[in-house]
Image (tube, rainbow, N blue to C red; front, side, top):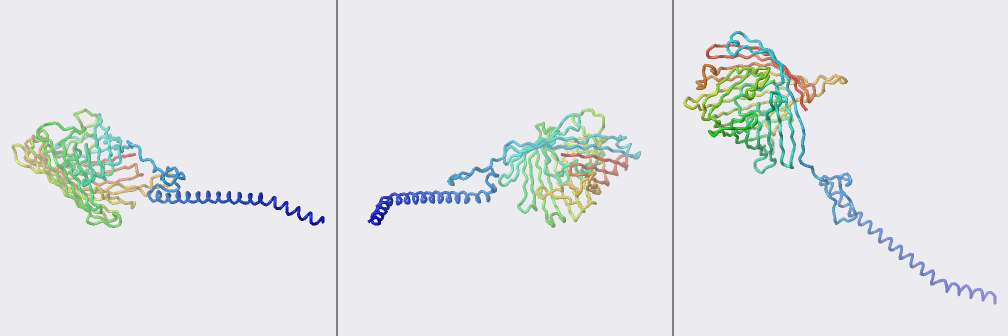
Length: 470
């Protein structure tokens, strides 16, 4: 009887507790199901974020996204923002100076022809420039020279880049596209001065022009319309003419081993109708310590012109030039020839001409780069800078140049004072590149002058330069 009562009690208790246990089991299952759904949702959102990452990586923004300046959230419908662009305008300051010294040794005939030239030293150039951009495709430069008693413009221009059909369009005052020697920066020329035919080039003028190159970078072309002649501040006055055209075209028919061996050819042309209907051409013997500007007195006197047409009445001027240059290992050769015709008012058309050839050999084995977009040689960077701790010797370069110019003619200006003359210069030089920013140059110049009245004379010139740039 007792066993039956106990069994009945257990059965009743189980019947009463069963609904409660069953309800608890159902609630646990429901909660587990909710958690599984939440985990699945998080997984899908994480996959969406990962799918966005490679897109930004391919676009150049990089991974992880935080390093690219992007903000990630779990909403894949709103992609992260790209990094901010550059802030305009931008400004970069640069500058350089040339400190020169020279010694003259003239024979008596040369003293009678050009006078007694004094030995001197001084700052040939001292320039500061600010350059940069005001937009993605608009850049500028403002460069001034302080080497004489008043500041003057050097390059002052703005340019628009990537212009359809034209390439780069420039407005202002700059070196016109004429001559390989002229378009080589004075920071990078292998001699203290450019060749004799430099005096026949339009060089820096105020105007508007463009320049471009083909996709293969084996052809360049440039042209500009200018006011002529402009003064040291880019200004032009006069209502009789004052306009001109300048153009240059170069090809690179042979180019191997990243410029170790190359052949450069070029042709240049300009035509000008000078303001005030007058023009003149003159040149020193490839040495000049002080530029004269605005008839301002200076302690140092300029080297007098050895060849000079004087100022002559002129209807127009036309000139063309041929260029050739080559590189073979560490030997570099460059040559140009130019012919210029002046249409004299009330007189005959007269032609002046000139040419040069120069050789460069890098003794320490560095390469002289060639700029395929501008068609000129650049500058040497030493393998080993001169440093006390490393004992480097820098880079050494030997140079030689012969140049010639004939300015003789029936000039209507003042023949007694400006007979034209003919000049041959032979220059030997050595360049020492201490580092990328410091250079010393040494030149010996033997000038052979022929005056139609006095006859032949010569002068020996020894000159040196210290250059620093930044």
